[in-house]
Length: 443
Image (cartoon, rainbow, N blue to C red):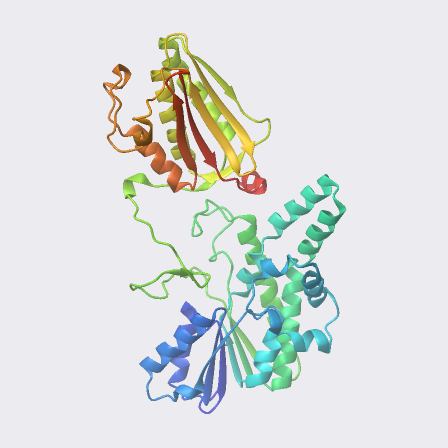
């Protein structure tokens, strides 16, 4: 097909594939190119880069457009997760997916408005539609529905059920293809090319590949399922009388970089905070149960405690205490403090390890009945190489509590010490942020 003088819309034009296509299309001299992307800065950056690379192409004919093509025009710049928190909007989103397609639903959609406004002769769609739909994660939404039913809270049951309806994969996909077809039909679009996906890179059900998984998760297999369904719907679109010529290209096993360079790193359109990181002090974050850490530490300290006949008493809730963190590092933190507690306890002393749920997180405290820490020493106990002058500390390096503090900081936890020489009592307390229980269940 001759591209010269034609209007071309590239969906996902900022991405790796979309931008490469834009660079190839522009040399064919289309009348104009609309570069569509999710974020405003993405669309404008793509247009700016094209203008610099192809200065002879009229800049006014490079048009940036941004927004979520799966939402209504009025909500295209908003996060769907946030929209679902509003009961009225939630009901509209459900109707947009599940009701018969009518003019009100059709003409309210951002994809319809985009195509109707620019009436492109050619649409090249490099948006990963299967990812956009499958990563809404119906499994986690389903777990919330089950929890709501178990709670017997009617208001919560209604909300979570509506969220589930708004997350259904196939109805969303069907509605998207219907809107796409109707929009292109009205705009008299001549050619639609879809850059598709296999969803799993074309690998098997138990073969390690990308995504840091030993085998594809249910969510990733959902992506493959949606991608397969999408292909069949596009096959039907291609056979539809008066529809544009429809072709799908489905590359597999392709992993690449969009660009290699320096500059600000963004995620979801927002700058990613950069932190100095020691590669020898790696943190691998995952959901974990703090109760398991306490039980593990109690077993590990038995031999140390026996040498001084120190009794270790632990208390944990009967339910899981879910936090997000590195099990090995959190265990290291607790072990450092427990080891100190035993070391500074007198013969026949007692060390208490207590885990409790508080409104602001899970509070883990380790208490010993040693001689305590002086008021002069207490403010400095977490500093590197700082050592008290007690005989018990003569072989210490002064690094243990500094490392514990660093681990706490890396986990967004608070770690502090309280001590009183008169009462012979020292308590170290760490407060960890909670994470949803369902993440622990799925780990």
